[in-house]
Amino acid sequence: MAAFIDLEYYINTYKGVAVPADSFYFYAERASTAVDFHTFERASAIVTAAEDAALINKIKMATCAAAERTADQSQAKRWETTRSTLRYHPTRL
Image (cartoon, rainbow, N blue to C red; front, side):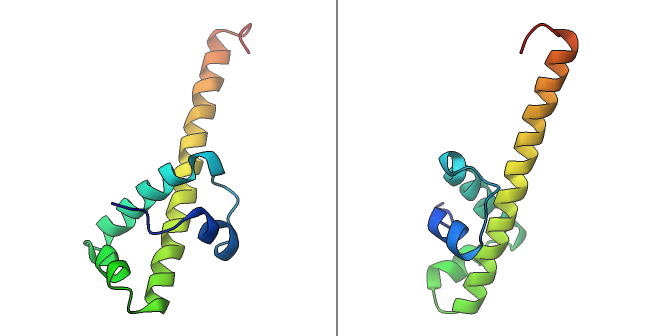
């Protein structure tokens, strides 16, 4: 499944900055899958049909929000792992 959003849409329309550009498509695809799942696969049908621009924009905005949330959770998990490593091995940085 292709992502509902691209980096240009995320930066220029959504005005997003939380998702790193180098891993954007990883999070965009995960978010697109989540949005499609929660809409009972209606989102992909609507985006593919490309008939309702306003609804497609709402789907893309929701996908951007989901991508940011997924990226935030991933970064928090990495930080917790680093913190826990430093707690047990304080000499490692």
